[in-house]
Image (cartoon, rainbow, N blue to C red):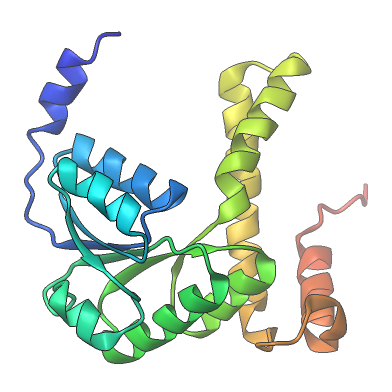
Length: 208
């Protein structure tokens, strides 16, 4: 494994940003590891003493407790933070934290973990504009492998997936204002009508 050169390049990036990660489970810990490899250092908030003790051994600054508590967020330095990454395992807690932070710190860049499409739209409604669906990264690996198994070259597979991802992002923004918090998609007639209209407009014409 040739890691020397990549690591040397990564260490050239300055650590001028204050980053807070809410949640140090499998998602949060992976994000923190990647940021640290690039020489960015995060402050982690989590409920698990065991996980925080493990992080502390590697010099990770951390706070124990509920990341939705305003006093804990302030102690972690949210007033000076340039980025908040919400990787909590509980969708209700994620929504609660997004709602509070976007009301109190509207200019703070928030990246939030979403559990499904309904959750994505809820987070969007509360002001979050950088949302990562939990299934998206896993699906990417499955999609790429499936395309390659069908004989599609790796670079073409990546291109095809990116086209879908861009279409998915655009369509979400186009119909987001029709979403009603707490109402499932299939019960929201306005949302269904808006999405169908959008898809019909974007469907390639078959006219000769």
